[in-house]
Image 1 (cartoon, rainbow, N blue to C red):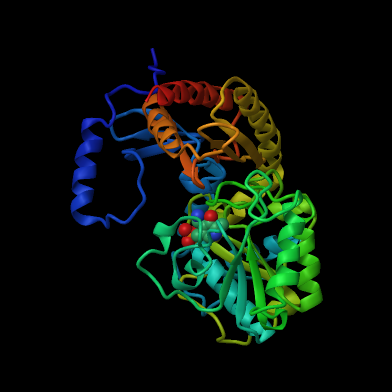
Image 2 (cartoon, protein in one colour):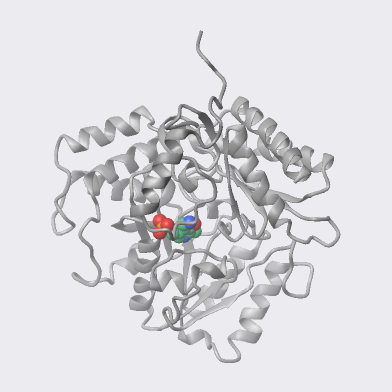
Length: 440
Ligand code: PMP
């Protein structure tokens, strides 16, 4: 009989330990690794470690494995492309790249768009920043406290979700001013409507002092803040930013690297508020695990980029484009809807759990981008950081892969094909792990 037990060896198992030992001798120690999961293979929402333990993967390679591990249609598309050629460079034309541009144009909520192809989120952000400067001829930018946009010197200038990400790397790109991200659970400004408060601060304080609006090239914002804590902005905020950008000739840049491609139950998160940016950055879930990023911009803006203004070697890699095309089809046909439905169910069940335990301050999210913020008590809202870390470790021991974000928020970002039954299984493991973590 098939052994359905998830965990079959003490964790980490002997092969995992040996691999980590070898890795420590040759791989950079800078990666923020939290627990000793050593991958062997995966299928759908399940992954196996090298010792044969099976885990439910609710981290999905940091919201990357959108269609699950090794979706047959994605693997087939990659194999098909590999049978043709592995690389040709962005100096030339080919079918996969053109088709991806056409698909993004069809699916876009931004009107007619052109796409610039690259390999990662941070590179998409760099491209967006360069485009905004090029189109406006201005140099300053506005970013948000708690934002995460990558770790290269331009995007890093905006990243502020954790100090460890910038520590030791100053100076980053100049000209970036951070403002609060509207968070009604943890307001930084006075007023009940944090969205309005932030917009007023921008317009009435910042633009009137040392950051004049007519020097600002772009506002870079995650429609739902990711690494900063899975924070959903209040209704009206993104529309308010859109209006403000229109009035001042500023490029509105949505970083949908984490929130895009079906993750929130819509193709792009900004569609929840019916707001279109001037420039959108995509990566992560777009390639189901293949490294691809896109700068997508309204045709009127990107068409201003002359030949040679921006480029790269690997942009439009055929295997990555093929994976993205297969992913977009699956997300459009099935998985965005699944994310909306299963995500709503998951949030409801987490709120029930919140009703039973005191340490859950807030459950929030859209689709399958769900955060559960842990606090030491609900009145003080003191972040329960150690509890969060312990819970993640206990979850690993119970067979569930999780990651955190913000100061003490568990984030749930399973593959978009996750079922209710898998969510139920995860919920049991979350509850058990929480009980164990609370003991210490
Ligand atoms: N933007 C956002 C919103 C992200 O969440 C991330 C990665 N967590 C990035 C950009 C950077 O992406 P990458 O790691 O692929 O450079």
